Length: 198
Image (tube, rainbow, N blue to C red):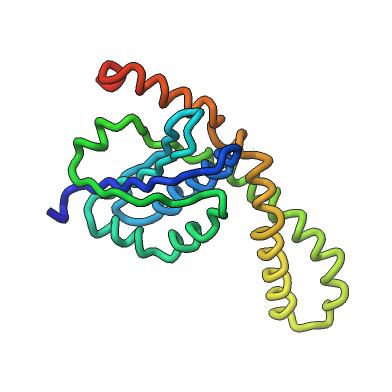
């Protein structure tokens, strides 16, 4: 039935030592999925400190929204940014509520809005300042629309390829829960078994 909730589980193999980068990327994927209609929640699960296998879970209210996420341009764009240290091992789809409530994964909250605002401000302000000091004086006689376009092109390129990737690596422990505490929580839940989920 198309009206049953659908859980999509994507499995990945991650090179040792690159787990934190994968986690930041997985949260980006979940945040992108959350912007689509029909998204119910999701989570990231590692298989333990000695394993390189990770899972990203997406929960949708029906098969239609799940398919829309699979074919979305944003998912394709983010998937192309995983890098060679991540190999997708396949996806699994299940319907109904039972798998969602039995599984050990719980939705991971995105960072608070004020943190995201501060990171975005930190990423945008330096390029805007640099561009206004070093470039604008040379094109001050150009048309206002062309100056604005040049500013937007220059700043977005710097933010996308230079500033934001470095800020994400630098601030990942501040933006998201520490990786070890997430792994520890999953290990405790698995050890407690059904008692932990009652």
